[in-house]
Image (tube, rainbow, N blue to C red; front, side):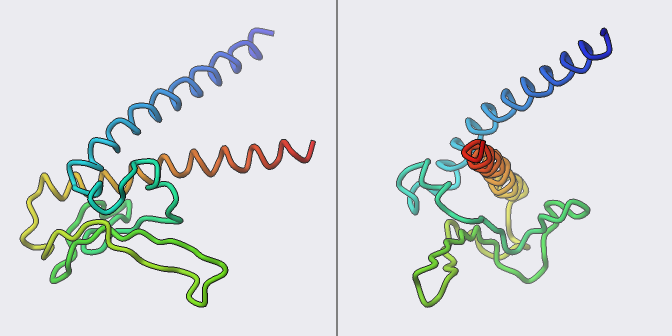
Amino acid sequence: MSSALDRLKNLTAKITSYELARKENLKALERLYTTLCIDEKVASFQDLFDFKAINLSGISLNSEHLGVIKAKKYVQIIAITYDSSSKVKNKNSSLGYFGRSEKLDAALKDEIVAFVLRWRFEKSFMTLEHYHDMINTLK
């Protein structure tokens, strides 16, 4: 019996920790949204999540090389939209251009990487909720 109770306590703690992390992530993401001037391209913070994906050029997002500058590249945050009714299904839009990777300030680089990762973190929660709701409609 205590084993089941311990598992329940661990699960509850994990869920609580994810929800706290998500709330903190959203606050930090919204701060970066204005700090990086993305609000000039996307008028509403919530509209960020209409994008299918957000990628980064000029800086590695690979876990083994996270934040490593790619030489002779331009740093840019790229948003991807998907339109199934359009002839060209995927459309890339620049959310922020930051110049040559070699000239990028280290603090700015960290903020750019954090923005993309924090967006992906929140988007994954939204996707999880979406599929959870879809599964519930089957019951």
